[in-house]
Amino acid sequence: MNLYKDTQLFGKIMNMVQDLEMNKLSSNDVKEFKLLRNERLDKELIKKNLFIIMTGVIQTECGNGNITDFIREGEVLFVQPIRNDKQQEWLPEYKAITSCKIIQVSKEFFLNFSSIKPSYMELILQMTANKLMYVMNDSRKYDLSVEERFDFSLAELGHCLGEQVEDNSFILPRYINKNKIASFSKTSRKYTSQRLQLLENNGNINADGNNILISSIDF
Image (cartoon, rainbow, N blue to C red; front, side, top):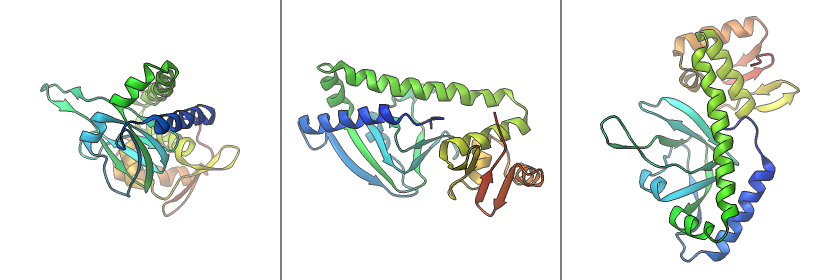
């Protein structure tokens, strides 16, 4: 996820998609599909295509359901397999946690077309650079104490996925439950419950089941 959605940049992405759609050579070059809740993106599709998330949220998992990121509406997923320490091809898992509408673009078609219109490659590079900035900011939490890391992660979820209700207050969506908060903050489920209770006692949040209002956690 990105800390702030660049609507102007995403508008340019949508104009690009429209152009690609008009000039596609086959139905597989550009197409729209739905990913239902709890479905995963097929890894063979990931190798051959890039994806524009139109609606919904996808979580990135790196082994045993370990959540490292959330990809939301307005973001582009363009990844390549890497080699792990055993020299095996590896990709993260991408799992929909809400129903998603996604535009799929063939990498081969896109790369060929962007040789004619290099501004399209620049757009993808800009989206990738924005993502890298988020990843660099997110990596700060690994230098923090457990308490600070948890608070940083919770604030991040609020800013990126929450609904803003006041200047600095956000309501987390119901699909961000305690298990997902624990996984994203790299803390235990027990610690998550204890820390949420303490934050509520201190007036930083207001928790009612899975409805969590974050009012005063800043990083």
